[in-house]
Image: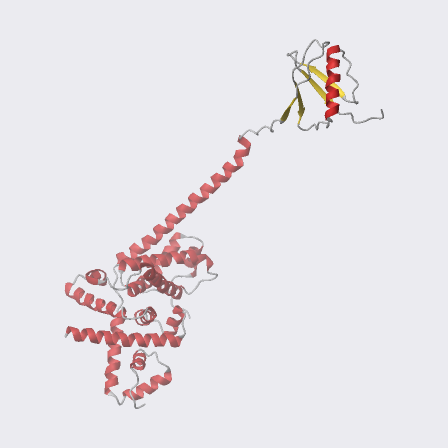
Length: 199
Length: 195
């Protein structure tokens, strides 16, 4: 090698970081080139300068180490607290159904329907009835009664109440239950549609 | 590539028993691991970021990462190389987050951590040299700085530097030679100014 190698090649040579073949070429060149030898010497001087490790005081290491251990301790404490909180939540969740009284089932919903007032009471009726209220349980489906039949039914019922008979009137096969209330003007009448027998 | 696990601090070699105990959560064993590697980690961080306090924060991050990763190591890793790699990456992350030009605030307090010897003359000389070196390092790119610090100051071979940085050896050679040339020019310029 006669031409001077690049500064980058000399820099690698100075640290013995070049490929073996390149190292041999540069070494051959250095034997004849004083300027490159000076360059190499400067690079080697720089390397010695770099190599001196920073003299850090012991306190710097101790402070760093203590910082790490403190963080770990804090993290461990936090983990224990979290586990305890989760455990407490689980215990409470397990205990809750056993300590709180069971709620009562919902009350039966009652529908109230107001039936229009009856026509003026007959002369024979000792107890004029102004209004009639029919109640039925939600789960009992009232039988659909045609309007015409309803009129006839009320008429029959009025007659029956006026006669003070204890036998229910035979009317369309319905079963009639009359409940007397404290109010003499109010009678609760339960009708049930006949399921239809042989008759 | 296996880097030696022995430290120059006198802490001795970390045996596998210590590593295993640290993995199982033994705090004393983990502290032993820190003692064995704290010098190389803090020293490298100081070289790369130039601030002792920042370097301490970075070193703490590195060891916290080690603690998190311990259980994931299936077998005892090459901790030295792993720590070098994590330290370099943490330094770059730290610089990016803090958006601060590295190595600028060494200044007058550098002597405080440069030399434990109470010799003012020596402190002054060392402080000047260190400031010069750190000022020179600021002229390098991150990759060049990491390569030259690992090669010259930590004494790794080019292949070891390549393994730590995850680069091809030829790339590392280019970075090292470029860094040496840049630093030489920087020193020549500063010498000329001083004269």
